[in-house]
Each structure stands twice: as structure tokens, then as C-alpha cells.
Amino acid sequence: MRIRKSLPMVLALGAMPLAAFAQQSATSSKLEIVDKIVAQERAEVQSLRQYSPLVETYIQNLRPDKLQRVVLDTDKYFLGRAHLAKGVELEPLIHSAGNKRKIFGGLQNLFSMEYVPRGFLQMIFLDENGFDRQHYNFEYIHREFLGEVRCLVFDVDPLVKGQKGRFVGRIWVEDQDYHIVRFNGNYNGSSRTSYYFNFDSWRQNAGNNQWLPTFIYSEEGNGQNAPTKNVAPQAFRAQTRLWGYALGHIQEEQELSKILVETPVKDQNAANDFSPIQAQRSWSRLAEDNVAISLERLGLMAPHGDVDKVLETVVNNLEVTNNLDIDPEVRCRVLMTSTLESFTMGHTIVVSRGLVDVLPDEGSLAAILAHELGHVVLGHRMDTQFAFFSRLRFDEKETFHHFGFARTPEEEQAANQKGIELLMQSPYKDQSRTAQLFLQALESRSKEIPNLISPHLGDRVPTTWAITSAVSGAQPSAATPAAPAANVVVALPLGGRVKVEPWNDELQLLKSKPLGAVAEYEKMPFEVAPFVLYLTRQGDHSSAETPSAVSAKSDTDSKP
Ligand SMILES: [Zn+2]
Image 1 (cartoon, helix red, strand yellow):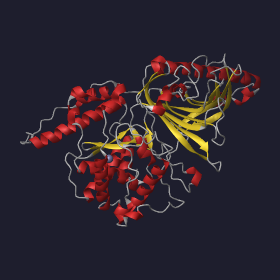
Image 2: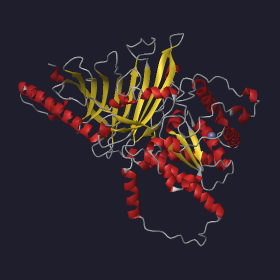
Image 3: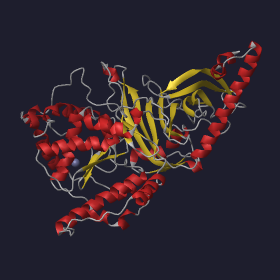
Image 4: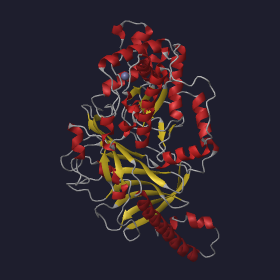
């Protein structure tokens, strides 16, 4: 009997006088545990129905090159709002012509050869119709920690082989309340017309004994063989992220509770009246704030937090060394998406999470921010119509049409020039080489990742920007630095830096141990990589995880 292995809960209970009795009660204990898991999963599926998180799926197709090495072929991107009340219903937020339209094509054909975003969203559920002992065999494997959370690990197989849509794989169950926190495997029954992908699906704790689906990594094929028509899709790697579960709820709660605790403060200064110039600045600031709040409410912008402070530290360094005194002060915010983009609206600099994720060092971050600060210094303006509150009523589906902060080529050129001037005066002057290598690497990859580098709201990363020659004073013809040395990481894989809190969208920098040597094949610049989440329980965070400790860290260690 395999069951004898599956005794950790029982053994923990201690003395069992008779072996036979022990075995019998172990069997029933295991059944009890499985029943608890099944019941908890059923409750989970039910509880998820109240949410409408944002869902982003990014796919990189792989193909063999002439030397049979696996290389990136092309990419696909999807962003939408899930309506879990209706199952795996998805409302797209981006509508673009051509390539992307095909993704939305076969919605009725759930797992068609074309990637269907709903197919990826499906992977937040193990099996909505019959995840129980009548349909599955559960085999206990061992206990294992995922981060701080101790888990029971089971292998799960459908009792009827080959039944379409049944899950085959492994589950990790936290051992306090028996929530499934990770499941890794596939669904049974791929056929000519539909194909299920291998996936690794993670849930994160959001307090209140609630575990929310947040990340799915999928991978298919190894890219070494050309795809066979109608049998399997082209090899790919994909990541699906979910966030913004608490949208609408918490912001209002927080703001109202603020009102309750604040005592009104009267400004005692005599000079209360605004001059026209001050009024103009304040009007522009109102427009910035309005846009930021709108995007935050939609889950597209992170609430002001630790990562913003890191960016603001770098901007501050640029300002101080250039003797800039900008009023109102320049602020930084982070767009939640994986696409690589940045922009300014008035005096607010916005950088996407995806871009922060792949930047190799502080010097390259400084270059991106110097370009944006260039727009600010040059007075490139935003549409202050957004200071009118009527302009903030719009259908969510229209978000990316409603807002747009892309600049003209002339303004981009001018911001590049200004950015170089700012960098030349700054402590980042000597780090311009890594910035240049980063831009070069992105330029050389741009054909394979057209969707990753297509901005939703702002501008593309200026990949042809020649920083090094200008900063080091060399001839413009020497703009191209030599190839990077073997130990230089020019760009990180996706998801390399920023951790997203799925409940309230707060961002933190990942705290991973520094790696030793990184092999060439491990560098994966701009690539989708598997994800290992460090799971914690909200509320029993140790002191190392308190917000004050985190912000203290980011203040002293301003490297992103
Ligand atoms: Zn720009």
C-alpha cells in the first residue's frame, strides 16, 4: 500500500499503540485530509467568483536556429479584465490590429491552436467539475516548504484515464487550512482541435485565510524541433499574471478612514493666494493626479510606494548634481504592466514594471530617468484637460485610447539630448556603458519581441539613443561600445526585480541572494523564465517583512 507513506499528520500525533490500528487510522486520516482539501478547493472556486482581477499573458515563441540552438521567434501579449463571477470570462483591454486580433479569434474553441487568453486563465482552476475522491486518486509524496509556508505534497491523477479536462500532476497544500497553493501539471485530453499546455499555477495569501491565483508559468515543447502541423503548437514559454483583486474596495475604505482620523488643519501662512503661474502649476498637477488616480483605480498603476521611492532617489541625484530646482517636485510612479515603456505627464515620471524588471543596474535606470527628466526640464506638457473631472469618466475598455502620453519624434530627440546633458553632470556619468549595452541588447532583440516593446500609454525605450559617445566625449562614430564582457549581464529576464502584491497592487523589490557566476545560457535577457514564489502568510510576517524595514532598506540601498 502506498498509503503508508502518507502519514506525516498522523505521525505527528504521536503514540499509536497497535500497528494495525495505526494503519487503519492513517488511512482514514488521509481520507479526511483529502476531503478537507477538496472542500477547501470548492470554497476557493466559489470565493473567487466575487473578483475581477486584471490578467496579463505574455507568450514568447521559440524556434531552432541554423545551429539547432533554441532562440526566440516572436511574441504575443494580452491584457484584460477577468470576470470570475462568469467563470473564465475575459474582457480585453487592448485592441490592436493584425497579429493580436488572432488571439481573440477562437474564443468558443477554448484551447485552440491559436493562443486563447481564456485558456491561460483556465489554469487558475484545478478542475471545476469534480475535483474529489470520486474522480481522482491522491498519493501523498512528502512535506515541503514553499517559502515560509509548510505544505503537504500530493500527486493527483484522474481515476478514469484520458478523461478530457481532468488535471494530472502535483499539488501543494498548506498544512493549516488545506488550501491548494500551487499545482503543477496539465489537463488530460489534448486532441487535434484542442491542446492543453503544461503549467505551474501559484496562489498567494492575501490575509483573511484567502489564497488568490497570481502567477502561471506555462511551457510547451523545447523549441528544438519545428512544429508539426495540427499535432502540437510551436514551442513557447508564457507567463500569466493576475493582480488587482481588491480594486475599488480598499482605496475607498482607506480614503474614508483617513477622513475619519484627520483633524482639519488650517494653513496659518499669510500668503494663501495663488498667482496665475502658481495656479497654472497647480492645475497641471491636478491633471497629473487625476490620471494617476484613474490608472491606480483600474489596477494599471501601483499605489505610491517603495519602488517609486527608489526611482525618486535616482531622479533626485540627477537634479541635485545638475542644480535643478523643479517646482512642483518631480515624482515617479510605476505602471503595472510587463511591456517596456516610460513617459512623463507633467512632472510625474512613469516607468513600467516590466522595464524596471529588466534594467541591469542603477546606471541604466538613471539613463531612462534622465531621458524622462529631459522632458520635464524642456517643459514638454501634458493634456491638462484631465484636470476636468468630466474627462475622467470613461469606459474601462477605452483606457488606452482615452489616455496617451507618447511624444513626437522631435520631443523624443530633444529629451535624448537633454538626458545626455543631465547624465554628464551626474554621478551616473561613469555607468553610461551598461545603459548603452542595455539599449543595444534591446535594439538587437526588438524583432523577436515586438509586443513586449509596444507601449500602451507612453514611448518605446529609445534603443538607438547613443549615450556613451556623448558622455565620454568620444567621436560619434564610436557610439557602439565593444561587445559586453562574458561576465556582464546586459538585461535581466522578465520579472527579475519587482514583486507584486496581488491584493492591493503594492510593489516591492525582490530580495534574492546575489548569484555567483551566471552562465551565458542562463542570462535570458528580456525572456520569460519560470517563477518560484516565496510564499508567506499575511499577518504572520516576521519583523524582516514589515513595511518600515523594507523602506529603510530601499532608502539606504538605492540600487534597484
Ligand atoms: Zn521620451
